[in-house]
Length: 115
Image 1: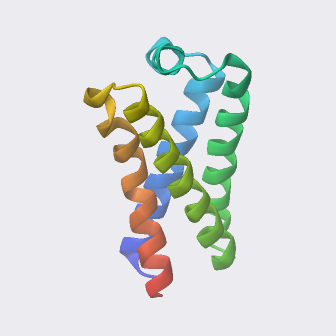
Image 2: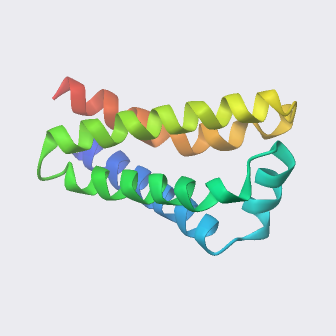
Image 3: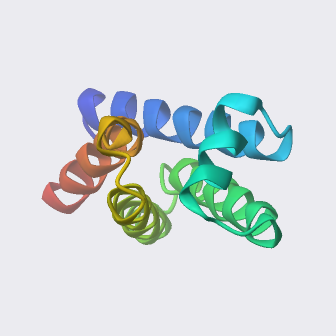
């Protein structure tokens, strides 16, 4: 495993965990946009759980690479869905936010596949 893979994996896991924690804590800067985008409140705990599981999977992938690849794939799909949700809500100024969270996960996935 390269140093770059380790760094981006840790960064991706930390960012996904922070995002999950923000949903669980119902941080206004996270839940208000979710409400504005039309995401039902009943989905919020599941969205947070998906991000937390992805973060844990990325960390587990440092020891079992297949878990990391699966977790990274899941998080990439999650954040792609987030981009679609933002675009459907016509909140184009917010499209960058899920992409920022997805960037280290994509890098981790690419570096993991290259290893």
